[in-house]
Length: 126
Image (cartoon, helix red, strand yellow):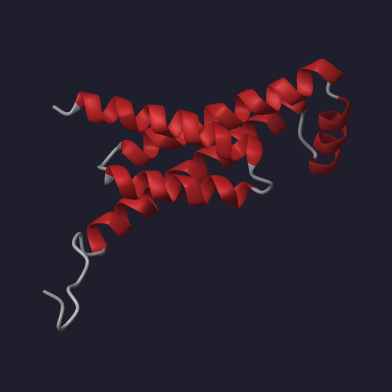
C-alpha cells in the first residue's frame, strides 16, 4: 500500500488548500491549486472524497476563525438573507469547500490519466 504517497497528498492538500484559500482573492484559486495537486499526485479512487473532506474542514475552520471573534454579526445577517441559522451557514460553507475540493482533485486525476506523460518529440530534433 502506498501510505507515504497518500500522506504526502493529504499534506499537500492541507498546505496548498489553506494557502490558496487565504491568499488568493477568489474561490476559484483553490480549485486551480487542487487541480494541479490532483494532476501531480495522479489522484486515485477515494482521494477526491478525502481531499474534499479536508478542504471542507479547512473552509469550516476559516469561517469559524472569521466569525467567532466578532460574535457572528455578519454571519447572522447573511444567514437571515438565506433563511438558515448561523450553524446552517457554516455547514453550507463546509459543503461548498467539500464540493470544490472533490471536483478539483478528481479533475486533476482525470487530466493525469488523459494527457500524455511524455512530451511529444519534434521532427528534426535528435
